[in-house]
Amino acid sequence: MKISASIYSAKAASLPALLKELDNHGVNLLHVDCNDDPKVFADIEQINQLSNTPVDLHIISSTPEKYFEAIANANPSQVSFQYENFPAPVNFPKNRTYKIGLAITSATSIDVFESYQAQCDYILLMTTTPGQSGGTFDKNTFLRIREFQKRFPKIPVQVDGGVNAEVSFILRHLGVQTAVVGSYLFKQETLGAALLQLHRPMVGSHYQISDFMLSINELPILTENELSLRKALQSIDDYKMAFTCICDAAGHLTGLISNADIRKGLLKQWEAWPNIDVHQLINRTPLKIQESATIHGLLEFIQQVDFPVQYLPVVDAQKKLKGAVLFTQLIKGEL
Image: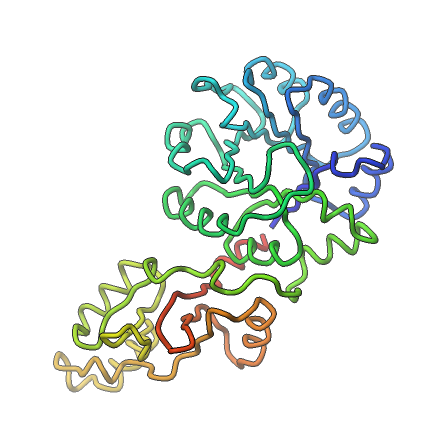
């Protein structure tokens, strides 16, 4: 996951000194908020003279069109426009060298991206007040990320607001492309230590698994009574998660069937085809974790397992299925 450093959060630092330090530590992007202030472009001109790090510009204005020429001259890598400030639909420049994103706050439905999809290269999910530093991350953003990825699977997601080391880990887990980081980055003892914390795999714990797991409504699930080989295969194929959860009538997790379970079961019962007993394919002791577990607990649990873990069912104290954690997106989030 890329880190875009929100430079106006470092209020006490001189711009040349700040840029030198950020460049020395290899930050990916320089995030610049333009809160309807043309003077921002003088700063961008200075940035371009002093640094080769790409500029990530965020326009917050009710008249974004008036900045189009200045944006073209500033040559940023990407520009996001704050949707809530639009008094009417906006047509973004077509002939451009930079990527365009639509920025929306937590109160705005992701549905609004539909009408801008053809014009935009990414979405920026704001979790705090646009243009202001020091807010608290809104954990509902985790669900919004998954909902957006399901609706628009080819559109990269970027997140801005309240990102710290633990949030960074979860965002990487969810496959977020870029995180804008301000206060956390510049309030640490050193910039290098802060960047290391944003990328390191082991972090302290504030959030629980229930805060960011896939919900039960997003999972492939079959009951013991309805289970058949065809339904198991269809369930795995429909959800594209390589497994399906098996529950009893009360919702307790009784097992799991994965692609590997079916392959091994077919080989073992090959002579019985097509009357294979699908219940013998169920892994009755799958790895699982409780919804109240912390990030730290999750990572410690994974470290104790001597084989790669791609997914984990999540249960409550009564062993009822509550969701799942997938690890496939974590690899994408590291790119």
